[in-house]
Amino acid sequence: MAITYNDLYLDIRRQLRLAGAAASTLEARELVCFGTGKTREQLSADGRLYASPEVEKRVRDLVERHLAGEPVAYLIGEWEFYGLPLDISKDVLIPRPDTEVLAGEAIEYLKGQTGEPRVLDLCAGSGCIGLAVASFVPGSRVVLGEYSDAALKICRQNIRRNGLSGRVVPIQVDALEKPERTLGEFHCIISNPPYIPRADIETLDTSVKDYEPHMALDGGEDGLDFYRSIVEKWKEALLPGGRLYFEVGIGQADDVLRIMRKEGFGDIQIVKDLNEIPRVVFGTLCTEL
Image 1 (cartoon, one colour):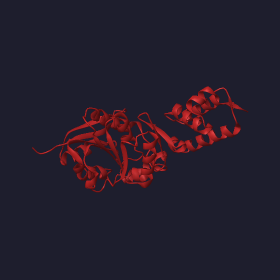
Image 2: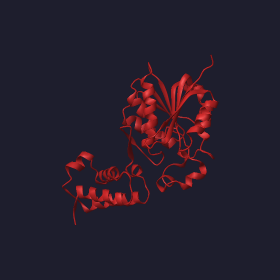
Image 3: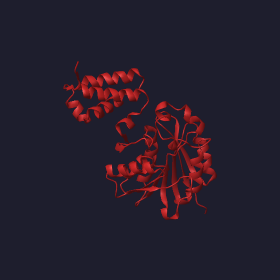
């Protein structure tokens, strides 16, 4: 029996809702749009038209894969972050709303700076944070620092997709090693590094454990390896008085604060995410008088 596009969307949304999907409306829309090859506007305009059995099967197959654990962003190959459309592959983490809090804090700070602030998004992944900064701080010059070749490919795609080739550059760097002097100095370093304690990875939700890249999750035995390395080794890439911004995992904020304080950062602040969980830690590199 034939089904209209609108009824197909409503049926998928109901199916996802019954399965406990928190974002059933968004996920249903994205899966139906991708499966039917329509934009959101086209889907709305064609809502009363009938979908072919082939198209309906394609959509329902996508939904079954999602219900088995595969994230929507990997199924459709893209996601939105801070209003920006981004290419996404299984080589990068899926951008999350919590990370928009980190981007927002850095953007507000950088908007108050004069000239053309240089910004480093370290452990850039898809490049989502650095691209948000470049988009909302028009004078900024941004470097996307990432170790993975596959992730750097996604960075390059997203730079082009958002028309930011003139102000954003992707560079291969290792956050666990000291930066090359040729990289120069930055007014601000922003990082959402791997921070899951290694033993905890197997306890994560299937959608994360089985699909997202473990390289981008594994923060070492206690989850703090990258924080220690970045604070100690990368502070020399900060200008005096420069800012360092981190996203942190649940229960890590105080540990990261202590790591930063020990290495000479001051005015350290902790910011909570949308769920009132301490999520962002940032501080200023102090200089001796």
